[in-house]
Length: 571
Image (tube, rainbow, N blue to C red; front, side, top):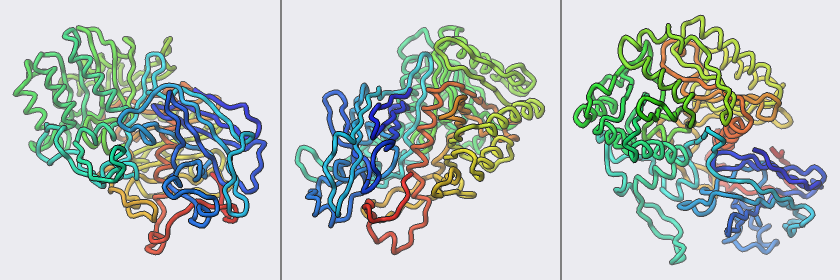
């Protein structure tokens, strides 16, 4: 969904994401001399406020412009020095109760003359109104985890505590128990003081929309005795999810396929602990099957059924773990469509048992492309693995050609991007050339390409082992315990005529597609593609400058917004 402003001097386009908005600015007919950024004012219901910046101008400019130090981070006084901004309501104001509905963004180009910030000029202001809410279009929902445990906002609310569970032994624990304390501003007392917080508060903040959708999905089943759930799980240790599955198991209303490959077969693993708990509590202990195809049982899926009829399915890259939901950057999709749900339910039945799992590769589910073209659903193709080598080569070739033929852009977030894969080769080729715009993030640090002025290529950053000790005014942030980027998605032609996104649980690697149980979705829908494109931009923008090496001297010198005398490139 795209909304835009008709202002001829300053324009702003607003793209709808999952409970977030991508704002894109332009100075099509406006002057650029003495230009120092954009001020963003928000009107949402009865709430009116300016977005905040993390940087301000140098003290001399604040003084000459009459800007009070306590107000300096408002974009009224510290404009955004970018031509885009991803706005997430709960990251700015009202974190405990974000408002969803129509937002009006007023964007003003700001200018500085002789070291003094000029007042807002209505002639250089544009506004746009767009619905900001969780993404739902017809019978599809798309959601993301926040994945910002290593961020200034998280550090403000929770300090540098990246501990998502009280210990490494208890599968289930009380999430309402205290996890830590952090110094925050008290709006009542008007002072900074220490606040205690719980694991639940951390989980809700970091799990964001993905956590909400998962809990809603399971609660729907729990609250209706006529419903039951089938579960594909690779990793499984999120305490609330485990408790909800066990609640259903006690009533004989859940079946689970849980991976047992590699470390998951260890009797001390979380998955082994879940198996033990399930067999202690379940009405039918045979409703849990441990298996791994010829590689891994790597899918992360819930299927909601009414009797034998599937009605809804949740899938994506999100493991049902504290890391998967609260540390990793992940996505999930929900299809409230019986035909799609039935397809997944049939795949579950064709996998439940040793004989079924070992013969799955030869089934029609693995051999065929499953085309979905129905009203209220995006046009898409769903593929289930493991596949034979011939099937893998065929559709890898098809996807590779589509990616190579991109006409405008490639955006991506991929955990592992150096595996043997024609698909990943095509991404690597685009990153290195200058034919189309590329913008992506992985969880590896090899082959990084940072921004180069006046060049389309050169943006591939890492979400792993980034700087945590940052120059002032930034505070130290938490290290990332494990993977940050766990996504496996590629957007092709977000701005082109044939947009498509590849997503799901598949790592897009040639070998694993022949051994792992996975699902790969190819979605050809502008609104869904936009949603994933915004997620890629959000992550790259967050980590891009953190990939730079800060010397000891640089870490001591404060960072400021640039004034017209500074030489720099806008991006």
